[in-house]
Length: 37
Image (cartoon, rainbow, N blue to C red; front, side, top):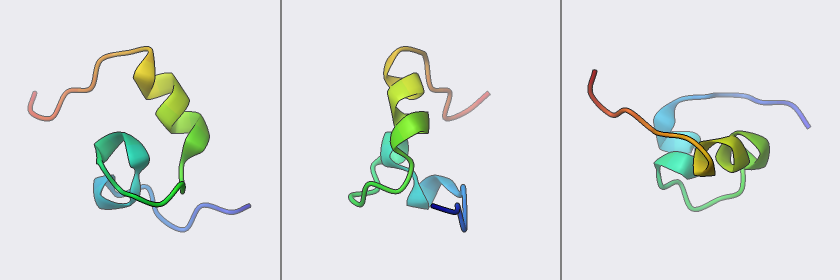
């Protein structure tokens, strides 16, 4: 599988409904996401 985009609007940890980034989403579940920094 190739990643075409890593924009937040295409990543599950930012609410995208398709399973496009399962490994990143798994890491994000164990960490903290900063929307504004």
